[in-house]
Length: 198
Image (cartoon, rainbow, N blue to C red; front, side, top):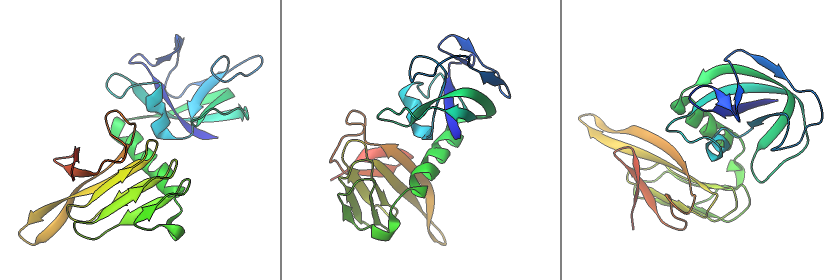
């Protein structure tokens, strides 16, 4: 099973020393959050355990993965191979792909409330709203905005006026955590940052 793992700045996780390219095997029973080698299927869930500022990240492959699951995508394996180290940008891009690959675009609309649903809008000054669990709102038009419930993801684009017309300067994704990014609050992307808007 493919996944992603976070480490401290020395490539340690819970006092266990890892190396890029290394393979590790666990003897004994597997228990989520207790014994075995842990990783996340969703790249963005890694941030729950390791903050972006002072951590390192890698793509991993788990073998003999337990069926145990928690509220996020954390898994535990008997064997774990550490693949390529990822930059923060690499991890975020992988997270965006993970979410987009699972989006129900067939049933997407400007406002959506279903589980793992998508609300999309591409028009200038448009808005996308999503209140469904683990859904996301995508607004990619000029000065567009998006909002969602806690647990949803917002995807926004930032445009720049150039001599030959408007061009996308930035595109970012963020999770509505209820703290840094508030629920049911519209955001737009400005200077590469998510900014509250009316």
